Image (cartoon, rainbow, N blue to C red):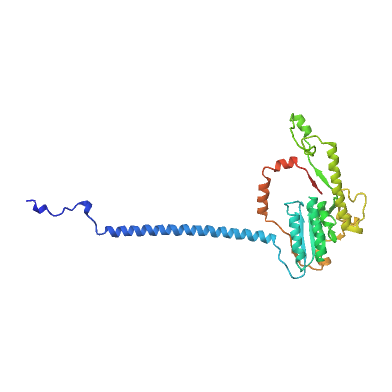
Length: 327
């Protein structure tokens, strides 16, 4: 009686739709296509980032080298080098930058002469001495004239450099001179006494704490420092006399640290005449075309380096450190 029911039973688990394989394949294709699109998008984003990174890197390289490289010019011209601001290591008017500029200018055969365009209150005697010595050496090596043109100020270390020039030109209102040496600092002993602060300083070496602003000034150490400054002053005077020669009309005030205007400087033999950069290029060098050979560091890089070095030092240095300067 049950023979009619002996055929294989068909259950829902055993039933397979003829469209099931097609649907699965379609879904797999869609998933793979989406995956490929995501991978392509990621690659494109990576490519864009690398492209922009390379572009910014190329721009940074271009601007850095555009400011620091000087193109050799074969046609006759006047080479100019800026000496502006403080003359100090790490500054724009450092010996490193100025000497590199001098080499580029002297080595260019198209440069008929080199003009130092100066606007500086002074700075380090060491940096000024390096530049002065290199100007003297390059003049003898290449046989080119060097002229100093003063804009606003040419004082102390700046005049130390200018004295190596064959001639110095100024504006009638320029400030010139200040041939002297100083070392400055602060003394806080009286303030510490009022505040009830005790200085606890331990040293090995009798003079190791010399110029410590929180200790009383020692007479012997003061005399030693004064003698050292006198020697540096003598070096400065010797350089000026060598550079200016018989043109210098020395008076008791010449090397006293006083500063004079341009007209007075000419009368005293500290300068040779009145004139600006264009005048010197046109009338003295006889080459009106002016090419700038100044080595300039990228501003952003310089600020970044200065920021990194200055953190944690600025306040202490301002209050504590003392340095020799020609200004």
